[in-house]
Image (cartoon, rainbow, N blue to C red; front, side, top):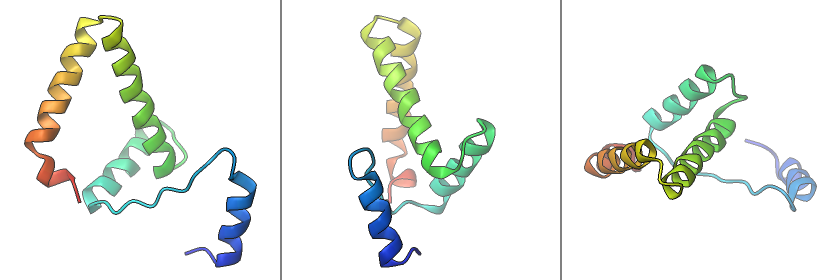
Length: 90
């Protein structure tokens, strides 16, 4: 854990461009983020979260452009997540 001084320096340096996100998540989620980071040559779990958000936003944009495959994938992913939400949610 970072010291209070280090956290303050980080916040001051990044206050206009970043916001720290501390999220309680299951161990499986942390492992999945590590796996995503490794699979796509990312710099760790934080970048894996950013990359995952990027992918989902891209799929949503494709859905708006009437890309049938994106519509199908988003529907499958959403349904699958909601069916197993208790497994993934903290």
